[in-house]
Structure formats: structure tokens, C-alpha cells
Image (cartoon, rainbow over all chains, first blue to last red; front, top):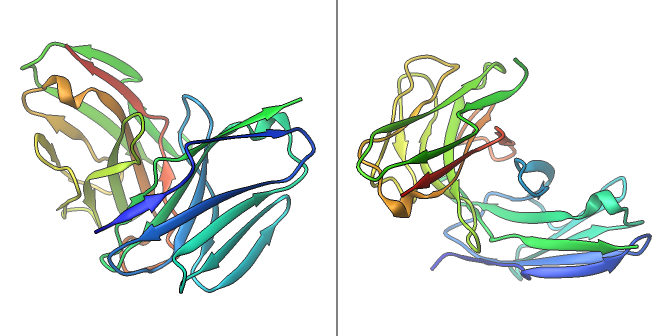
Length: 109
Length: 116
């Protein structure tokens, strides 16, 4: 079956580092996306991985291991504005995205 | 207009009524999508359109219909609303559509629909 698993909620401290994990079992694989969604707002694109390894983009990095069906999003130097939900989505072989339920990240001062 | 707009922002609807959610994009993107987002669940694809004049069914199409008469507009219609259709509905678009793996989807602000 198709499944994407992420932790429901995480808490971290301002200025710290947090890693949000995503594991997936899908019908084929054409890449993995991470989106950020603030409460009451639309999801916005953060990153895309299709090859194994780490992609760094400023304070945010995303890692992919296709053989393990695993990805993580790493957020460094956390700021209060990073409080949001982080959505993992896999592009299947039919080129439709299947989405995880999201991880709500709470940043404390 | 910049990006994707959706209307209405929110709506309370009596069960059995017909409702059309509007979505317009000004980015000249080929592909458009309708998702619903429910608490504790991931976004679920309702319908999509790869290009003007074509539409396809997603994961949860029952009770919904769409049309794509032109590039910019992609309305979603609930023919006879039921309480289980209470959700937040997001419209999205992407430049190329399926077949282009790195094709990022951009989302509208959403419509919060309550069916009583």
C-alpha cells in the first residue's frame, strides 16, 4: 500500500537544530517534496530531492535515501517564524503527489 | 492578481445544496489541481487538469466535478453537498504538469467549507 509517515508534533528551542523525519512506501518514486504550512495558510514549497544525498538551502537542508524510503528535513538556527507544519510528499510513478499528514513544529523561546 | 486566488474564503452550506469553488491563476501554468485537507490526514487530490480542455480523477473524486475551459480557471463543483465534504479546499497549479518530476506545485490560500 501507499503510506507516508511523519511525527505528528515536535518541539524545539529557538536557535537550536531540529530534524523532521519522513518514511514512505509508495507506488513508484519520482522525487520527494517538503512544504511548509503556517496555520491557516497555504503550503509553500521548501525543497525537492530525487537523488540520494543532502540538498542544502540556507538554514534548511533535505536528505533522501531511496533504498531506505527515508527523508529528513533539517532546520538550523531555529527562529520563532519557523513554527509551522512541515509536509512531506512523494511523487509517485503516475506523477501524482501523495502527502503525509504533516509535522507540527512548535518553537519555544 | 499575483499567483493563485480562490473564492470564497469560507462558506457554510446546507446539505444538499450545490456549490462551486472558484480558482484562478495568472501564471499561465499548464496544470491545475484540487486538494482537500482534513485534520490528521495529508492533502488528498480530488481532481486535476494537465492542460486546458482535459481533466482527470484523483484519489477522492466522488461527489465532485471540475472543468477546465481555459488556462486560468479551474472551478470545483459539489453537486449536492454532504457533511463529509466539510474540509479546507486548496487549489494548486504547476508549470508543466505530470511527466516533469521536478514540477513544483503552488497553492492558493484555500477555501474553508462547512456543510451542515
